[in-house]
Image 1 (cartoon, helix red, strand yellow):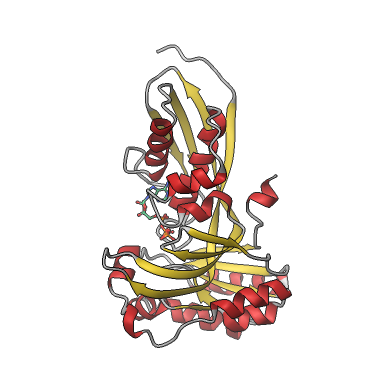
Image 2 (tube, rainbow, N blue to C red):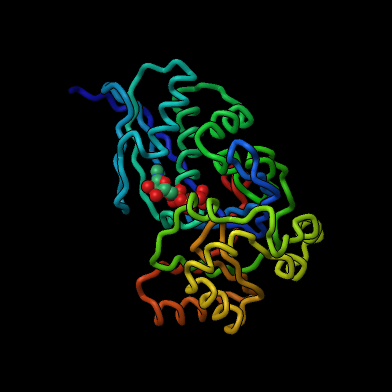
Length: 298
Ligand code: ATP
């Protein structure tokens, strides 16, 4: 079929980590009510969007073995916004995948959010950020946050978002061991009514507003570790190594298995990364930094 070249739109989909993650309760409908401090990090997927004469959504993926059909969150997000905007034209999408998959870094949600932003621009649909969030939550609880990213308190099932002050500059070492953890397994095995601890999310928000790195690292906590660490002790090992080698603190992100360590000096993050790569070359290891989300994209 003949193809016309229209303008190409590019979007970056940034991964997130959780500086704090608390679960308040399990609702009757099965969703969990959460309090999470979300933070984008400088690890991203690249997406491109182009109008096409061919009907429907055509996705090409580089860098990962993922379904490129209707199961992919990108295709689901595209179908949702095109239908809402009564767009009948086709679209070609490419994904360059770099964010580790099933890692607790919201890679799929970030791609879906980038798709909503990209197609909103490509077809001039005029949806506000709030409207994109409302579309996104129909596909996944982390998608509303991923629309803008940055530093946010996420409550409810993830749809109530409050922007927070960015953390002070520091360096991160991010390690995804070579195991895949299903988010459904972790939430399914969480004893939400009898958690042994609750991280101080309000104190963390306060520490962010004061720009206190120590206030932040002292309060890092994730109740999902109670499930994932028990099933995968490698997570505990990585956290301990990070702390022993000079990280201010280390924590599992989301439902895991990714672990991040916060370091004051880049050399410390690089030393930890080198040590972990040597011990377990099968995992993915990044030395990176926090990213400001939409504010930094402007
Ligand atoms: P979260 O932190 O939101 O739980 P995650 O990092 O644990 O996310 P994802 O990388 O988003 O997990 O992937 C979860 C599952 O979603 C994968 O097993 C994959 O098959 C499916 N998936 C669908 N679309 C995508 C996509 N574009 N990128 C990654 N995974 C996708």
